[in-house]
Length: 413
Image (tube, rainbow, N blue to C red; front, side, top):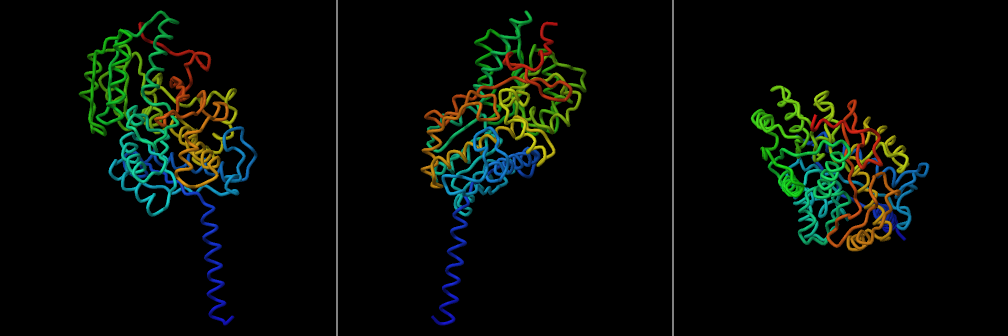
C-alpha cells in the first residue's frame, strides 16, 4: 500500500471511530427562554437538565430513583445523553423555529421543554410533523394533551388536575376550621396558560357554590397592575387565585401593598409564584401566599432521593430545587429511562417506550403516585400538593397527611 493510500485508510478509520463515538451520544433538544423576561427561569431549567444528565451519565454513588445508577444508558452500551439547548426567548414562534433546528440540524431524537404553555403548543406542532417525541416537563395548559397528537407526552399534572386539588384543599380546610371559602377572585394573564387556568377555576368555583366576585384578565408583562389591584381590593374576595408568571406575580403583590390591601388568602397556579426570583423580588409581601405545586421538597421520608438530588442541584446552581426544576429533572430522567428501555435512539422506538412507561412514585423525587401515560400522552398518576410560604420558604400544607405545618388560614377571620 502506498503512502497516499495508507493515509486515506488511516483517515477513514479515524472518521469511522469518530462516527462511532458520536453515535454513542443520544441527542436531546431542550427549549427554554434563556434570554428575555423569562431568562431566570430558563437558566434555572438549564441547570436542572444538566444535573439530570450528570445523574444519568456520571459515575456516582447510586441514588434511589429512576436512572439513579449512573454510567449512561446500559441497554445502549453505556451511551451518554447529550443535551443541546435552544433559546425560545419566551416567544412561541421562536420556539417553533428552534425546535425545527434542533431536529433538522442537531439531529435531536426527542425534545423536552419549555416552561410556557404557549411555547409548548408550537414546539409540539413541530415534533408532531417530524415524528419526534416531545416531553412537556412543565407546560400546564390542559388543552395541550387534547389535540390528538401522537408524539406529545407530559409527566406533570396539568391545570385541571392542579385546580381540582386547590378546591379539594378549600373543602378540607373549610371543614377543618369551620371557615369556608365563599368568594373568589380570578386574576390571569392573556395567554393559553391564563385562559385555560381561569376556565377550569371558573367551572370548579361555580360547581362548589362559590361566588366569583372578580374575573380579571390582564396583559402579560404589563408595566403597571395598579388598576387591577384596585379591582381586587374592591372585590375583597376570600381567596385571590392568580395565574401569572414571575414579573407579574411580583408586580401585583407590590401594587396591592401600595394601596394598603392585604388579601385574606392567595392560592396561585404556581408558575411565577413558585420561582426563587419571586420569593426574592416580593420579599415579605409573599409571606402566607399559597400555591399548588408538583413538588414537596419536605417529603424526604417517602422520597429519599430528594436529599442527594437537591444537593447536586444546589452545588450546581446555588439554589434548592423548586416546583419547576424538580419537574424538569423528573422529565429528563423519564425520557432517559424510555430511551434505555427502547434500547434505541430511534424516535419511533422511544415513543413506544414512553407509551409503556410505568414508574412507581417512590422511584421519583415527586409526591406523585407514579408516572404512567394515557392514550393522549398525559401522566395520569401526577398528584399535586398545596404549599404555603412561611419564613420565605414554601412548605407543604396539603394533603394533610403530607403536611409539615398547619396552614395559616385567614378566611373568615
